[in-house]
Length: 388
Image (tube, rainbow, N blue to C red; front, side, top):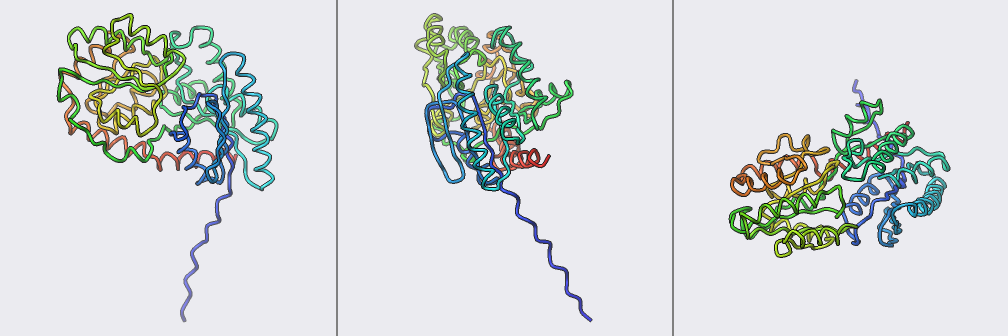
């Protein structure tokens, strides 16, 4: 007598989820950015993603991804941005509910937390709090004592009320854990384009007479550009051919440019403004050394991009950077201090990491921060918050 083997279990399709995400962080003036690509991939995995962000006006649909951007002015005017975002978010969430989809609200950065939490109360759906900065360890120089105190209280308040919390660095997970607030570590991700090696015109630091430095980030106090410029003023005394290219824009652009002129660095520093992914890759292909001078960080994506591009790194040991770089050979970490930054850059120029060291770091970064790996983890986190 023969028996028929049991049929394999048929896995039920996962329910479709609509994530309505809010971010008060200023988006770049481009229509193709890491955030757009990230949320497009999440929309494909979940069902739909509706993004209500701060930035230049933009309304776009890309398959299951919908993006609405509205300008946000700083200070009390941000309340108007939050109020408008709540109105849009409620409409998007209710439309998804009418389609029979599971709805999750997602808030990133302080004004996004406020918007997501209010929409959650109105539509009675859970919300996930995304914490991208190491806000509980901010130095006063980043924001000032009063704003720092308010922000730390806001982090703890919203974290207690959120349905889930996602952090991007070990230092942030530990800080919340000490306060009895559980969170999930899902680090930033590299875009798939970083899996392709850059074509360089010469190996990094092969000509130490005219080293080419690069930094990428918003021109705000927390990025420590004043520290970097002071370090550069010291370095050009011994390396007069040194050049620094700054990619990024922000409220301090005019001030930072004036500071560079005051220090006599006008011929050594070039401010390029915001650039898209392909342009940043082109800058990294020309760079001899990548410098991060931040006073505070979560885990900067620029750190991962520079490492994947096999560019030597000097970075401040703040936030999630030390834990991420713990096993990266040849990376120089220093305190957020101009003299320390200058010393580390000088040592990197005089004794650069080998090509083998740079390649090994690249392999580690691609394995740990690959796009699909991290997008899958984030999609799983969203579904787990919906299931609670």
